[in-house]
Length: 110
Image 1 (cartoon, rainbow, N blue to C red):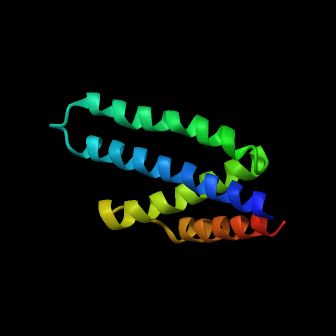
Image 2 (image 1 turned 30 degrees about the vertical axis):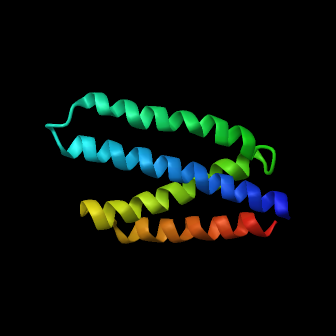
């Protein structure tokens, strides 16, 4: 059980790396006067994902690690998009996010 918990924590860390890289990329996109060379920063940040993913495989399966990582990342990025960038989600997409959360719960129960 402890191994699975560590696996879920690493999946969340992978999501945090996504969130940071996506947020930086969005800021660069929105501000045309920012030098596009700043896109190197999210690329470097993404390099840490390979290391995290590697260590995450010690605690859980590739399937669980990847699914939890992607769902957590997608949900948090959607929330950031709504609150910080005034993006809009349809009702169907909100339902999809809720189902994503349910899938994480189901993965953690096994």
